[in-house]
Amino acid sequence: MLACLSAILPMASVLSATTFAGIVAAEAAPTPTAWPSGWDDPRFAANTASGPRYNTRSQIVTWRGLTVIDQSGNPSFGYGNYSLLNSRIRTREGPRVSGNNILIDGCYIEVAGLGDDHADGIQAYGGSTQADMTNIVIRNTTVICTGGALNAGIFFADHAGANLTLESVYVDGGASPNGAIWLANASGDVGCKSLIARHVRVKSDGIYGPHGFRLDPIPSLCNIIEWTDVCWDDGTPIARPV
Image (cartoon, one colour):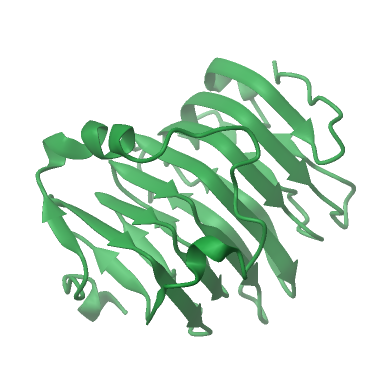
């Protein structure tokens, strides 16, 4: 897989990294429950079939209106400096966050693990040393874990150190042992340094009990800038972690 990472596939528009804030602002402003209703949501009617895509350049690329069905076990998209818009994904591994300037907006992400591959809907990975990933935005997006070997719907760990915004997001962790959203923070290994969470709904039927939105084992290592309308899927509020 590493041999193909430097290849930017067609339909990716290359932009200056300084335009990331403009990309976020230019897309439709999020509203509560603006996430896709499912695989057949009308916004995907004109999508184009695609394989996984990766960006390892310093310039931002934009992928829009794609449908990816893939069982390779590789991340469906990655790794930094990319915008993934109005796309639907049915894979063993969802998008990978391993860099700065990432916008996932208007997407439907469905994952199922296989064998020892414990699937994550969206995973942030920083490697063996502490990273500081800036400008990570996930909004207007649905993440569903459907079965097989699972880990979590959204999983930020492994020194990712992300500065993360979740806005108008629905995450069903299914039977994932670590629940819908786990932003893991431990001494010397911070998965999420700062968090804005607005209009988030979660569902979980984990084998170790329902876990909705976790920042353990040390939640205080994450600077929670905002925690607004974060609830279970039935509307029951989830308390801000402390």
